[in-house]
Length: 180
Image 1 (cartoon, one colour):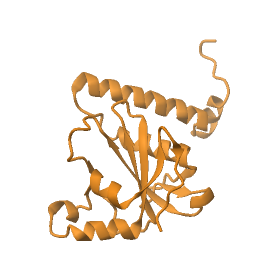
Image 2 (spheres, rainbow, N blue to C red):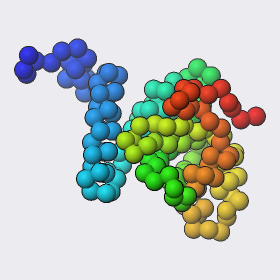
Image 3 (cartoon, rainbow, N blue to C red):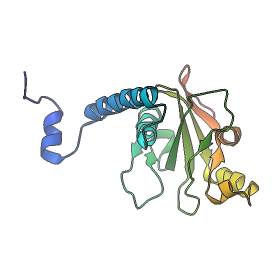
Image 4 (cartoon, rainbow, N blue to C red):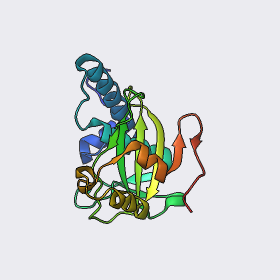
């Protein structure tokens, strides 16, 4: 029926919040639009990959997203990650032949327990998710001290994959590896 809302959508009308199914639909649409935009313009749609990655990580690894800009973490772990404060980064890999892919600035001066990196394909679909404890991330940044990238808290995807453990892979689902 035209003009009539059903299901969880009525919740968003009264509370201003969308239910989990509405969010999944919105993220799916954002994923489609971001991929179309990239194909049409040759440029990524700014800011969208991080939002998609946060929702994918939460859905795939049982995390609760935190929408509080005053904290440095994006999610709180549940289950085997219970209570872990997790910063989530994303990277869309458009050309796998390039080796200079970098992750965004790590909030090294703020509190968090681990860092997740969600790697996505050209359709903004998750391919792999890596996780690394804070100490290892900070050590890796410290090792490159002096470079402009380390001052900004940036790191290459390859370096992060070397220090982190694989938490999820598209073909396998959740992987039971974890750091020692």
